[in-house]
Length: 428
Image (tube, rainbow, N blue to C red; front, side, top):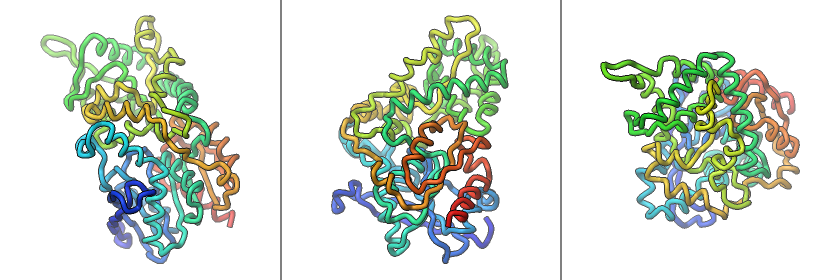
């Protein structure tokens, strides 16, 4: 780490339910990273849901987006509630809440609206009440738009990368737009590596005929194998998936098996052990007060029969399609980190009382300078929906980029953030 950069741990106590400030309390952890304590604050809201904030390594502090941010800001990396060193929410900790219904009720307080109110309590303690800047990546950008809706007085300026959500659409709308983008990513994979068509089919056929349990207890079904497509949304995702597929089998003395290398890499890619909230709340981040999400990704998937593995494998030579950022009921059967939470997940899928996350009238009158990068080739966040939202938010300047994908903030080094900061500088 460059010697001039200092890191400081912060712990904060916040209400589980902000409308009950004297009720149950939970803990938040945040890491302050700074080279100059006289600079203004920038809080970073990580993608997810359910991902902890970045743990900065020397290379990131020297050449990554954080190195650029530290030139202008005192940066706070916040572990959003339930993640990292904040009070955790996992298969190990949630049973202490009681039965599945009590666990589900507890988790309804872990969406963007609560994260924003957490940030406001933290801001008042750190800045003495002065507004601060926010950088939201992916789901962190969704939280940032909620911030603009609920507490714009706490914001000096806003930056968003790959995280401008639909304001009024629900989970069904999101997935109806997502599956065609997944098809496009599969087409790119098979165009670049046509040999992978036969390899992927052969793996799926093996899994259909052999119950396969990976070393960590993951049940590798055909559908679970298809979900490796979540890798395709990263800048190098097509190539990484190809390399994972290139030698999946080994020949033992008695039979053909999936190789240890393949199995260990697959389980690392599929496990939700480090981010169970991602699976539990993924559809809830799109819930806008219009009823239950009801396993939207699975319902909408039926409208796109090319993702039906049984149908594809019955046809000679048809490519097996990988899926992207979708959560299904079977995840809570195949993943050992999620199995104890199946009843909780079903209850959350049936929950009807989600409050709206965005106030369109407040956003239409927004005066907080807001700068967003929208990626034209974003697998996870639909660019058309993002641009529609950008048009609905006053004082939002959008940069449409075809140079990067969803992970552009990290994959580009300093480029994406530097461009946004330049836009803000030019607008002052």
